Image (cartoon, rainbow, N blue to C red; front, side):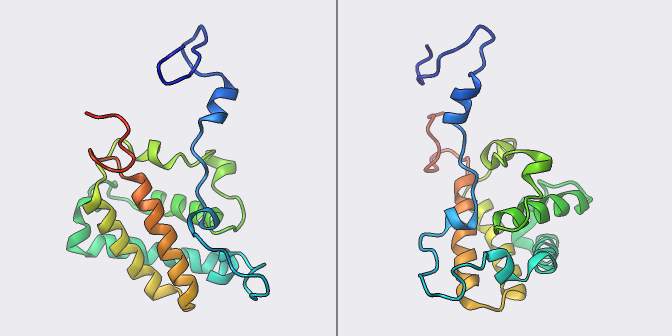
Amino acid sequence: MRRDGWAVPVYGEPTPAQAAAHAEPAPSVASSVASPPAAGDPSANNPHFERLGGSPAIERLVDSFYARMDSLPEAAGIRAMHGPNLAPVKEVLVRYLTEWTDGPQLYSVERGHPRLRRKHLPFSIGAAERDAWMLCMTGALDEVVTDPDLKNQLTRAFLKTADFIRNDKGSSHDHHPR
């Protein structure tokens, strides 16, 4: 058995049961926002996806987000983490945000569990990168989302998720001293 408590089978990989027990939870707005709508609130049974405006609003949000990433000097560092053609990553983000906001499951059926931290490990993501990402996203939210309560909920959820992805030394998620 390894120090982290995982039993190591012959091939050195965790068993499926162990992997499931240690898997990252799939983040969603519902799991990222501290307080769900109160009972009796008209939005209580209306997922964020619908409140946002469905697929057209998600697509506008993603377009606005990447337009800011392309144009804001503060976002140059995170823009450099992407290839020159943003079309493929825009499509992935549309699919991810659709599912993240409780819309149709477009991301996981095609790409599996998001594993956001793992997928972003090749990039150094600290407070500056998180803040640049949030600058682009809050600008996009300001442009696309008209409901102030929904905008606040989404902003808090995005910030929680963006902070979760940080992998810099000293972040709250750095469990392995370097």
